[in-house]
Image 1 (cartoon, rainbow, N blue to C red):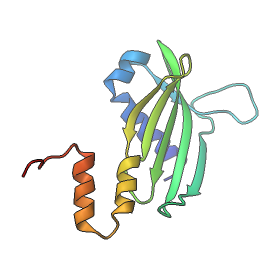
Image 2: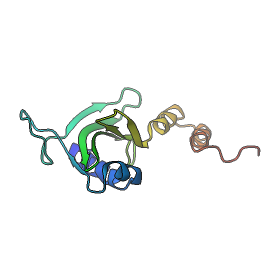
Image 3: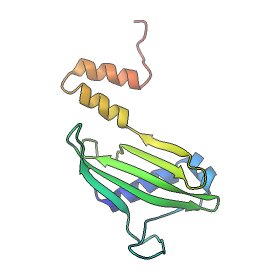
Image 4: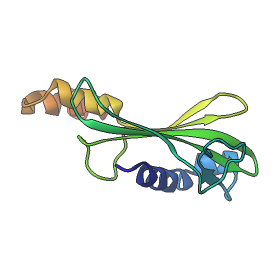
Length: 140
C-alpha cells in the first residue's frame, strides 16, 4: 500500500486502457509533484494520503499524480484498501486538465459498500453480487 506501488500499478492499468491511449497518445508519461520548486518530473513526490476508512475500518492509501501525452494532460486519482486483495483498486479516475471531464477506469466503491452491508450473511452477499453484476437468474 505504499504510494509508489499504488502509482506504478495504477499507471500500468492506465497504459492498458485503449480509450485513454486514444485520448492522450500511446507515449504517455506519469509523474508526481516536486517539493518547493516549480518543476514537475517523474522522480518527484507522489501526493498521497493514508487514512483509516470510517465505514469499514480498513486502511486506505489515496494518490494523485499527473498524466501527460502528446494529445493532452490529466490528473490521476487512485485508491487502495487493505480490505481488498492485493493489486485491486477502490477506484482509478482520470480527470482531463483542459476540460475537467472525469473518466472512470476502475470503480469498486459500490462493491465495497455491498460487502460491508452484507457482512457475514452469505445470502445477502450473493444477492448484492448479482445485483451489481446485472442479475443473472431473473425469472427463475
